[in-house]
Image 1 (tube, helix red, strand yellow):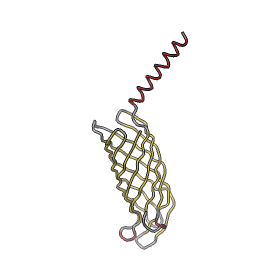
Image 2 (cartoon, rainbow, N blue to C red; image 1 turned 180 degrees about the horizontal axis):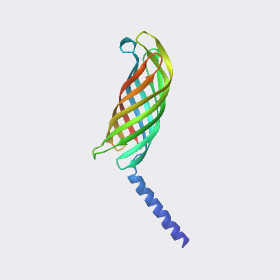
Image 3 (cartoon, helix red, strand yellow; image 1 turned 135 degrees about the horizontal axis):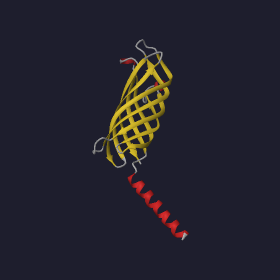
Image 4 (cartoon, rainbow, N blue to C red; image 1 turned 90 degrees about the horizontal axis):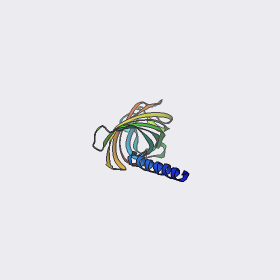
Length: 180
């Protein structure tokens, strides 16, 4: 009798777990990004450049077409130039995504609190490297090209306040995404 009850409980748990996995949306995502960053005064004193980065997030569904995520990102910019102009940014990321239509398209908003070292020049030629927090906000859209991959286009704004230059950096970005 006990063996029959244990077997029926085990079978119901296994079948419920299988049903949950079939209907469960992907929980993890990794984005490989390429952004273009310009910091400092315009023209010959601007620093920045190509910013390759990687971000990883864990997502939780809120509703059928809405989820939120927490994770981290790290990026490196100023590649190909002088090593003193190399910048490194990384930190926690929070994101929200909505898929309002039945098409494989999502709209996303993320906020990052990046910590790092950035080189900034002002219009008078003062060029320094700063260590600090440089928050960013990013909005974009993703096209789900398959069940576990997407192409993403976003535009972000990074807020910078240093002695040499204060302002906002606009960062257009393209990314490839995998999720599971």
